[in-house]
Length: 153
Image (tube, rainbow, N blue to C red; front, top):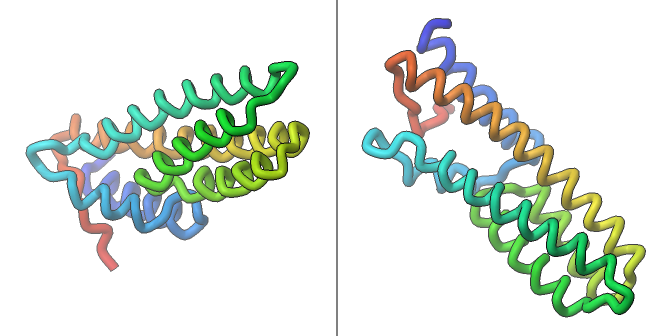
């Protein structure tokens, strides 16, 4: 596939993720930190986010299965996840974390379990979409193209 076509496809894909509410403007801010000397900066940050989030999700699953649920500990994990999802622009994950924190305040194990499912669904959705995006970006780089920061108008 021609580089210019892949670049246009990438721009439209990112705009689509922004338009559907998967990502927010914070993601665009991250893109501003990427340049020719480090064309994979954002994908590297996202990979760290994926790894950290999977670890936090495991901790949350374990914490919710305990006979005596420690809602403070769960809230601390959710707060951390909310912050990291905000910093990468993962809007749906951040919003699911806001609901999750409310469930922790109410100390409702059932509500917390439902919220965990919502967070997982939002996380795996954004992970799949960003993984596709980064594979496309890698194809662009492998074809000798560049990853423009500007998405145009």
